[in-house]
Length: 292
Image 1: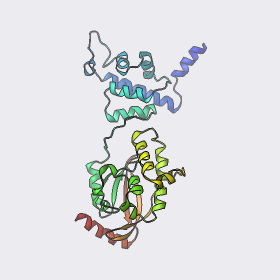
Image 2 (image 1 turned 180 degrees about the vertical axis):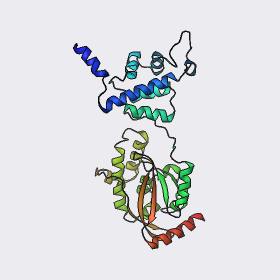
Image 3 (image 1 turned 30 degrees about the vertical axis):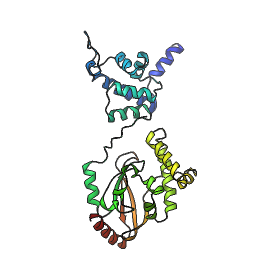
């Protein structure tokens, strides 16, 4: 076998996780290509068309990539695929947000324009938040955005309903919101741990615009954050005891737990269970206040 032929064979031979991903990506692209009719993307059907859906050269044309390069991609060749090309393929193949995210995951790339839709907060999860009352609970994503919360959580650290939705982020609130900060006992320790957890989690999202925008905002608005960030500390998420000084009922001590909503450390339900009888009684009073 010649050197060229050996290289050609090696490039087609599955080996390791990378090969598995490439073959999954190739199969996914073929399946999406075959389901789209030429008319859906403004191309003439023509005569004597045997290929179901679009031809490879048509996908290449719509995505502004070379036909040979796209053919190699569907053959699971070991080639580099940029985020820009994946974006063009997603648009050419009319992928929905879930399919687009799957495409980028298979390619091992970061989506430059991830969907802003949040499919996490289902009616069932909202109902569960209500059932947990009088205990405070909320839904957060890995970026600390507060996606939903029950009434008790809404008055735990401040009047959360009065906070603009774009500011309902625990990092922003912990570093810039005076009332929220005044409700946290051991604030400096909490801020330091949050920055360390944020740094550990952000390692998987370094190129994502929303993460970079949050980091810039914190860096611009909080000297305390800049100091904590410069330590380069990293810690994992874990349950711990937390103390708050609520303006309505006084000191509260909770056992904090993250209940992850999937296999990855992304969206989670954050719960606060009273750690003592005094807190249990005061939380009941806080819930009554929250109900109005």
